[in-house]
Amino acid sequence: MLDPVRSQSARKSLYRAAPAVTWTVADHLVEYEHAVQQMEARAAAIAAGEAPEQVWLVQHPPLYTAGTSAVASDLLTPDRFPVYRTGRGGQFTYHGPGQRVAYVMLDLTRRGQDLRLFVHGLETWLIDTLSHFGIAGETRNERVGVWVRRPERSPTAEDKIAAIGIRVRRWVSFHGIALNVAPDLDHFSGIVPCGVRGHGVTSLTDLGCTASMAAVDEALRLNFERQFGPTRTE
Image (cartoon, rainbow, N blue to C red; front, side, top):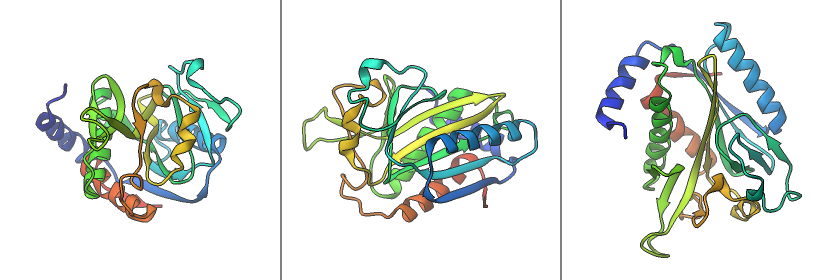
C-alpha cells in the first residue's frame, strides 16, 4: 500500500510545474461512441504535443461498457441497454443520466510515469470530493473503486459509489472515473458491476445528499486541482 504522506509529497513535486489542465463540461448527453472517438483523438494530440491535457465531464444515455477483464456471465440482461466493448481496464460498468463521468486525459510523462501513484491520485480525488458532502468514501485492496459503509443494513455492508477504469497509451491516460450522483440505481441490476458480487451500488442521492450536479462538478474541480494541479476552463 502507498504511503499517503509520501504519495502526496511526490504528487506535489511532480505536478507543480505542469501546465493548467483544460476543464470541459458537456451540457448535453454525449453518445458513448462519440466520446471514445474524441478521447482517442485528444490523447493522440496530447502525446504528440499538439494539445493540452484535458478533463472532460459528461453524462451518457443509459448503456453498459465492458472493460478488458469483462466476463460474459456478468452481463445479466444483454438486451436492456446498448453494450460497448472498450479498451479500458476493468469489467462491466453502467453509465447513464445522473452519473458524472470524468474522462481524464493527462500526460503521465510530466507526472512521474507511475501508474500506481496515478490511480491512487484518482482514488484520493474521489474520496476528497465525497468528503466535501459529508460522505466517507474508502478503497479496498481486493475491490476496485470507491466504497461507502452501510451499517444501517449490517456491520459489514458496503456499497460502491464510484468506479475507476483507465487506459494509458504512449503515457497519456484516457477513460477515467464515474461518480454516482443521482442515477437510476435499478439500471445497475443488469450487470455485476465491476465483477463484484455480494455488495450493492449507491449514490449521493441514495445516501441523502441533495447536491446538484453543478455542485458536484465544483467539488470535483476543487479537489482535482489539489491532487493534479491547476485547471483552466475551455
